[in-house]
Length: 139
Length: 121
Image 1 (cartoon, chains in turn purple, brown):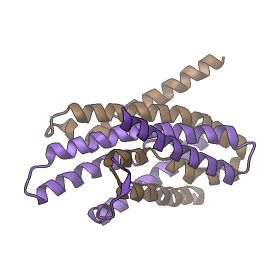
Image 2: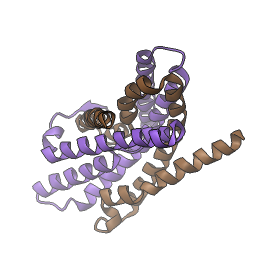
Image 3: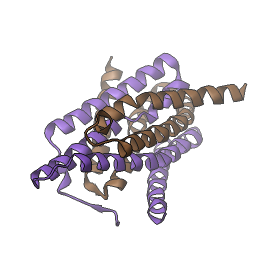
């Protein structure tokens, strides 16, 4: 299936969905900073890859699928669960991109300008993520 | 205190931006890939760099690789549990399973850290 944008999807999300993501994302980022301050960069670095939005993303995927089916007069319980499982497997693939970003950060930040490191890291993340998805699609 | 508040604000914004992006993208399996975006790292790096310098960020980056491997294990476990659960069982609830499985991330990340620190000795 070709990757595309579905502009109807954000309309499904409600204000509390966004508030939840903002608060949870902010808390985890602040917590990662506090942990790094207490335990140092070796332990703190682990938390840069903490699954911050993953539980919320899975839960929202499940509830949106369930709601869609309910609106059509069907029971979407199983459909919602399966959609959340697909989301989780997608995130597992996406971690390959996260590793590429971390590798770029590790190897480049001391030898190039921070902006270039972040740009290369973001490009590596996107390229590896897209590549992993394409390979997965071919299998 | 100001630094924590700033991290909270920047983190909340960056994480929300990635979450919003994943709402737009289809198919859902690709949108899931954005769930593993480097949102916390992008939100933190600027502040950390300013306070502690590049070497400190490089060490964090090296540990982040281990955290990402742990994320891979964690997401795979959550996917397997959800796929194999009955729809109405507690483990069929995505939020419940994702929260209950968080020790997988903690265990794998700290286990790898311990392993690699021992190998270096």
